[in-house]
Image (cartoon, rainbow, N blue to C red; front, side, top):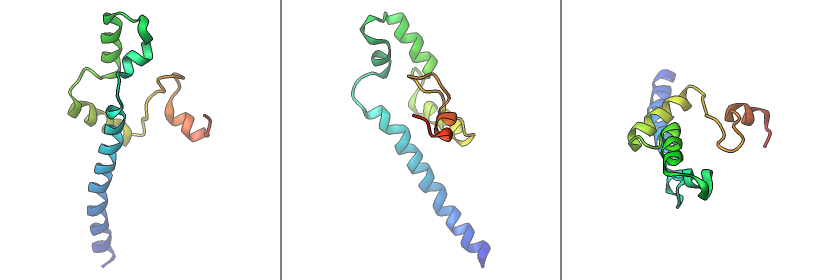
Length: 97
């Protein structure tokens, strides 16, 4: 009986987690403007913009970006801060800002 209960809860949790992850992945992409342009400011050349987009993986299709992101998050790799260049996991685990 306990196994059946846990199996049901797991079957409900998996889609819920996938929906939440899709929302977390999508929200930053809905913000107006181009993050690459913001990062490099107005001084950047088109070549610089393309290189940074490739480095960040923003030149790939959205489904590919999502699956790669989901895989990294599942492994605990939250990436690197775009501004401080420090690992995000280390930053959130230590509680520093």
